[in-house]
Length: 129
Image (tube, rainbow, N blue to C red; front, side):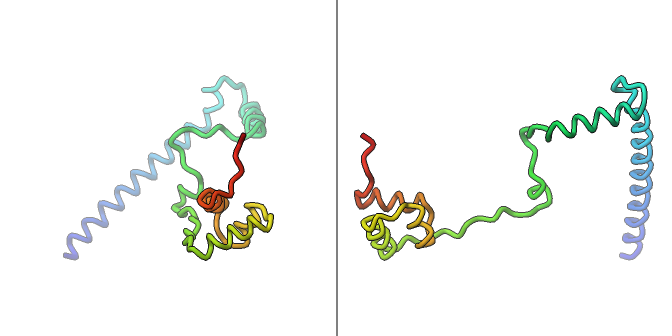
């Protein structure tokens, strides 16, 4: 078993060496990048990069992920509220007291769409006409 581990370790070391060489070779190409884009000097190229950077972030490309998603940070999801009969009664009472949907939602710890759904259920929504 230790012989297998030793062989795996040697293979991994060779892979690291190969990747290191590839990285060094790719960095060498960066020195001539300004020529590929038609600039006479590195300074001109850098100045143009700064202008481009100041003009704002690049538009989002389909398939790209946010920094949080790329880092593996899960999105925070709100806790789903249980709409009990007591909450429904409290919503109806608050509507009759003249409170806004947002005020009711904040007081009862439910979402504004939930408040609207409860108002519809009790027929407390004004008609659009």
